[in-house]
Length: 193
Image (cartoon, rainbow, N blue to C red; front, side):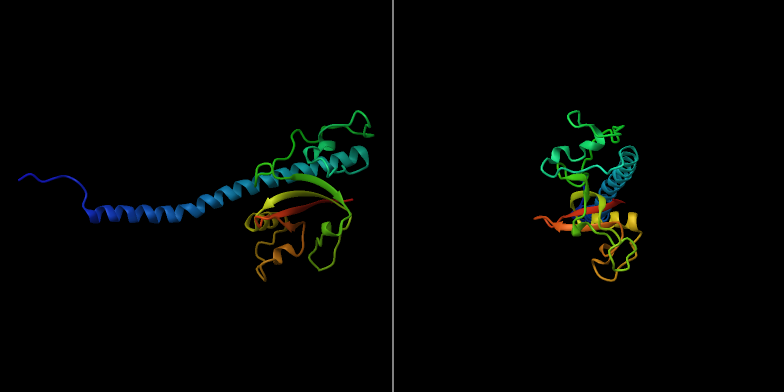
């Protein structure tokens, strides 16, 4: 009697079920790892910017200004001097490379100096604004999950769960505006002006 070799239908279904379970367990971990890598890259950039802004201020006595009409040169004073109107005391470059937005390629990321009410921060979380004239790092197209992870790093507020926006109430990280794809701009407090 000649018996054929192969898998039965039940064995095939069993193998497919095991594969489906493995994929369903691994997929969230993969997405979490990707998000964590982006957040880590951004935190490293924030720390680089803090050092660059502090050194720029020490050398020039001013914070770098932002020219919102030309986003291509958003961090130019930290990277190069302006030969036509030199910055007194400039001893850079303070950053070797321009910031790249790890959350969406080509999205805006830059240092701003502002007294705009939207840029006020309640650093101690007591409900009153502690700063009004600030240097901040703005980054666009950040999802809620990414924003919460960043806020947890800078403000240690990961345990705050009384309301979906409680983490955004105080500290050095805050959301600003909503884009069409429900991602936010995120503002990180760098220094008081």
